[in-house]
Image (tube, rainbow, N blue to C red; front, side):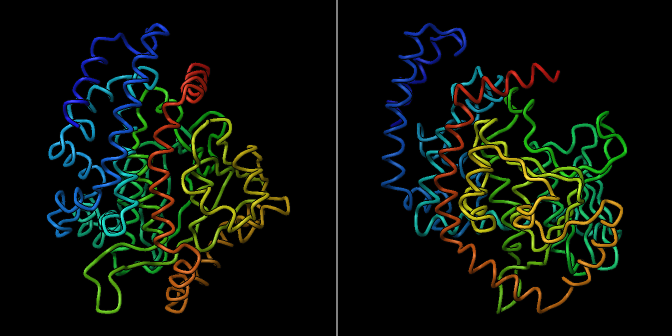
Length: 416
């Protein structure tokens, strides 16, 4: 494996950047990469359990996905990119990369597919982050944490998570994922919190100045510039804080549960686009202002909308799911199909009062036990794991698709 991978690396090093390659050079690079990737897929498919056991000392250690791919690069040369190769990739815009994240996707698909390694990795991703554990004592005392993308405040047993990227309409990037996972961890770990609420803050963006906005989805400028990583954004987002909203966070807990979970409410002002709409599918109760709308513009962007392909049909049915995901249909809060996605639609002036009433309804021990059982029945862990295994590779392939690079490049140029 290492020798074959070295030959491919030597070939790529001799070639100009992807955009400057001749048709013959592109064909040579593509053929070489296809060959080594087929070898990697076969190898990890056949040896996933043994690889994972070696990296985790027989599953006695928990490694997050970023730690796991780095450990694999050291222990199995040629299987996944090295730290130096990934650093070089991160320094380039998306169009000039060689797609080394695809090799990370191949590796993680194999690990997540494995019957023992996959569940262990999911559990590792449900553990609280070191950043959250460091901030927890201060948060339990003060009830407030201000981060770049999220403000967290505890009042009367409620954790208020406010998305506060006011200049970019709460568009998602790696910093937002880090801040959101930290905030979700803190809300779940703080014993004084009984229920969580996610809402967008007021914007300074010229088009929405002074108005609340929920989320504009993935930051396409960052994607075009190469700043949306597979491991630290696209996979961490799904396996980290979003999955923690569904399952809870792994703690020492008690004899009856290793997970600490709580009910969650989302309130949508203005719009929930892309990743914002994806989030709504994991909340226990969703409210929306009557002038809001929802969309998953996967057809426009060319990427996979997270776990929406896994979850949306359960809420909206297969026909509406295909209209939204494949056709780019936008659903307004005031049309009948919106009630498939949200529980309450109220005039904007009444949203605050409706939120308070919903918080009161979800604050109870019976609610907690029942939402846990609902999530277990509706989203069995093994089905989620199998979906995420394939997502790891398919999303990696998509973010390097020529159509995606062209679309996000034009968007970035047009909005600069």
